[in-house]
Image (cartoon, rainbow, N blue to C red):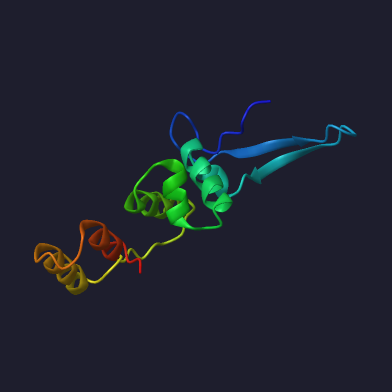
Length: 124
């Protein structure tokens, strides 16, 4: 069986199903049926969503499984949220003031690089 395309390979518009058939009894429905928001996602985005669900929504685990950085995982999640048609209010992980304080601590040798990274990610 072929995978259903959610977007047109020519123009990128959303695709609709126009015919449904039951394999059991042969009943056929014709009309215009929406595929749903998940069909707007690329195969790579679907893979990310499946991984995200498997990791129970924990981006730290997603980053480990996919071998990507935390900011990359977060960025991909935000892209998927937008692709699904939701608005995203992108907020920095930490305030600019706290970021400066962490970098100052690092420059003064008060914290390690690993500790600085953890703090910049907003982790405790």
